[in-house]
View (cartoon, rainbow, N blue to C red):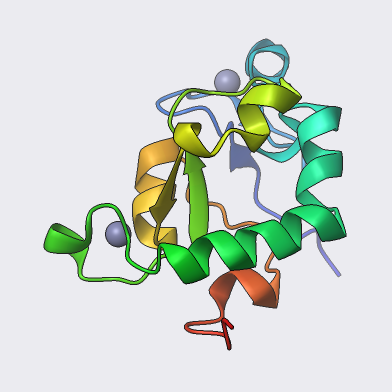
Length: 131
Ligand SMILES: [Zn+2]
Ligand SMILES: [Zn+2]
């Protein structure tokens, strides 16, 4: 019974520091990445988890079924991208003129994150029954 867990590299691109199991980043980059993807901010998290948002998203995607990059990627939209980062501002977050439909692929590329969205089946469902 020897410890099989090899040390991992810091999640920051190009950082050579090793990190503890269970950590995402070395101490230097931990602070730097504290705010990103997962808990970008509590307000947005709360909204994205709300029924209101889920309903809204469904309706929005029903009206805008194709990824904004459809010509290139050929995917249908499964996410709403905020053109201007809302940064937790609820007005911006709910502002439809600040939204565009995106497929998961393009959205991941766009946000520069590919670590998944916590594997919510709803996000990966190809074409739900949109009204
Ligand atoms: Zn690092
Ligand atoms: Zn796309």
